[in-house]
Amino acid sequence: MQDKEEIVYPVGAERAILVITAISAALLQLIDTSIVNVSLREISGSIGATTTEIAWAVTAYAVSNVIMIPLAGMMSDLFGRRNYFTISILIFTIASFFCGTADSLVTLVIWRFIQGIGGGALLTTGQTIIVEAFPPNKINTANAIFGMGVILGPTFGPTLGGYLTDNFSWHWIFFINIPIGLISAYLSWNFVKNRVGAVKPKKIDWSGIAFLILAIGCLQYVLEEGSAQDWFESKEITWLTIVTVLAFIAFIWREWTFEHPAVNLRLLKSWNLAMGSVLNFIVGLILLATVFVFPLFVQIGLGWTATMTGNFMISGALASAFAMVLVGRLLTKGANPKLIMIIGGVMIFTFATIMSFSSPESTSANFFWPFILRGLGIGFMMFPSMILSVQGLKGADLSQGSGLSNMIRQLGGAVGIAIMNVFLTHRNAINQNNLLPNFNLFNENFMDKVNLLTQNFMSQGYFIDDARQMAYKLMDYSLFKQQALISYNNVFWTVGLASLICIPIILLIRNNKSAKTEKIEMHLE
Image (tube, rainbow, N blue to C red; front, side):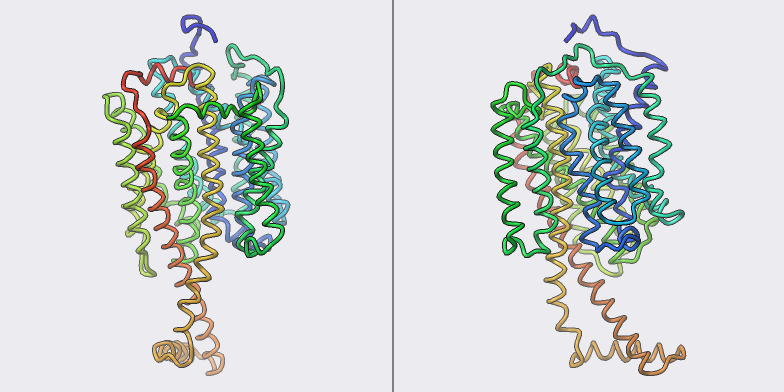
């Protein structure tokens, strides 16, 4: 790496173009982690998939992201940052087109996986470009730009997805990427430069890459399909679980012992990076799991449209942006980052607790302030953890540590979505069994409601037999909505517990007060 005096930082229009190129590409990747969430019902109906099956459209993208993010640094040095970044944008853009034209679940999942392969480079490489565009004394500005993208992208995704789905069709949530992607690719090719001091890796760790793909791929399949196949009663799930464990062990051993690892796991010897990785995993789970669950909750349980869902989430996104700016100023003034993160955890717990008491009469007014708390809480937790988890690392180790931290946060989101989907299926079955005994001909309240509905339909001109059947169908739908609402309340309570788990982890992180943030961050790539 060159000395600091030898580094020439872009200024004026050149820096503005670099930042716009990097942030637009990174936001493409981040928005697509959640843009499909509000459209899952429309997509599943269009391609003939169940609610459980359509979750693969989300997790396939997240899995390939997790695989590619830690490999981006190596690939960038191997092919040159400009070449790799531009090609990745084009892969993402082409895959977006084919996602929009998909007419089956298999086709959609395959192209979402390919889309994630291209998108994985956009996050890590985009961060490198943004940070290198600023001198050390303005590095907090660079990290704030990147941090806001990490939070705002997944949050604004449902807003954009809801508008496009309701006003055009679900296909446009993918087609919208095409013009932006082509412009970003053009800017990347013309303005992005290769990393200063980059050296091509002497050897490519193909074994480590293969173990990583095998481990994460099998893990996601087990989490997605385990519930449907009765877990370890299925030989397929049992064998894939064994493969997952063995692949993870092989991956850890390979990366720990190989001289030129694809993912430098030896950096986890750093206490802060190890604790920060656990924290980032949980934060990723909370961020993406709530963005995944809330649209389903309000659309299935409360009858919201996709546009209503997306527009509602804007307030939480703005709260996150405000929190990132506020936290940056507090840290600059010497505030304790661990205290800030604990406050954030309490905010998220409060959000989840309030949401867990939702009822069929709940409206957007009931959710407004809880979502403001969620936005503030995630902002309070994420930015300090990004700094503390790499505190004490220097040079190339710091760059590798940042990539590893990003990977684990994305892995937390991917696993979180899968776990929440499994948890929802399990709770739906339990809650339906608990409610079903009350829906029978011998329950006086049930029959009073059926008779009232029957009379209502008869007053509209229906024959008594037809009116009775319609009343029963309406009661069945009522049962479905009630058990779904209770299940989503259970999910929010689980998210609240996850936020509390963060607090003891935060206390274990070491805050080296003698290390100035600027000196640590100046090596970020």
